[in-house]
Length: 429
Image 1: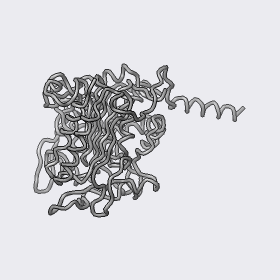
Image 2: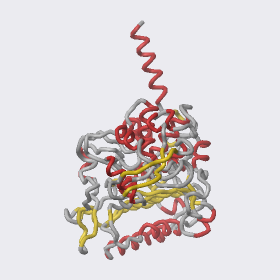
Image 3: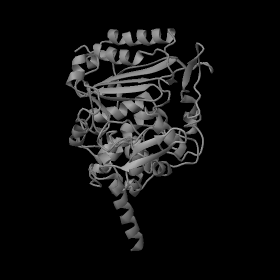
Image 4: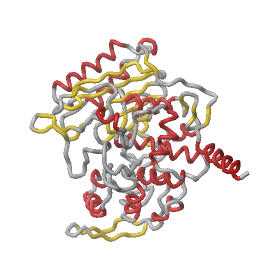
């Protein structure tokens, strides 16, 4: 009897986390000819020309570009070098540090748990992470010794604030405010990833006692709030973030190349980050950047805001799930109704860009943005990553565009806006 009870408890526990089957059964991404999806092959070749010219002009060392329409990959090419010093050419299936493209995946995990009724979006995060109970706003700062004073925040940080970068939390080394860069550095905050023996729980608890830029909900400040949500997912699900992603998102979608830490068989496909120095592309180095991530180290830190690496095909698969209103291959991750309100403007005009809004996981093009031209239809959602990666997906046109590079520093790279423009001019239906 005891054995049967254990089996029953195990089954109930598994059922609580297993994905649900859908009445829809959209197939996995497959390849097709551009003409079969209303795209012009001749016009798509303008992307080739643009990227080859950019490589010849030393704007970038190389790039992988992917375009999909109607669930079919109709353009997927690699150009230039993955590693100039090592002499390795880029391959279409190479793996890139996608950095902040991780945020949309963490936000998806949050919304999956929200659909299960575990919390409300306007709940204070301190209800679940009590370290955030006494939110404080920076008042004065002494640049000589980095000491500061604070005042109590007018209102608590909510889960919605964290999803929309309106919590007031900062972003360390990439923060626009030097005071916060110094405060975060002194506190030992990890902003991107690390090979050290550290957990996201430890980092978030350090972050929780630091001052905010402003009162929650008052302004848009790009932040480590999604890292907080990565730890929140661990608390609410009872499993490490890497395990949640693997079992709840990546395996159901068939995303085999997306990891916090790559398995040994994938190491050779990781593209090194490069910077242009004295006219040559060399390995990027910085006191804040660990080139060995995600191949080695303690492998204990799962950054919900910037920790993942993956391939173009994997990320296109993730975006296709969104274009399918939450379903792929007969498995439903999110409801159509959930995705619909995730794409609504959540922060009014706080983003400061009249052509774009911000939803619960993405930047979203609005009607004014569509009218500016070359960016897609209103409702197109997008974001990018710290090492020069980007994506966009247009629900109206059912188009996905992904451009992956691995560079830091200024090299007059204008391939990002050109790629997006060239994808939409290739529509031929």
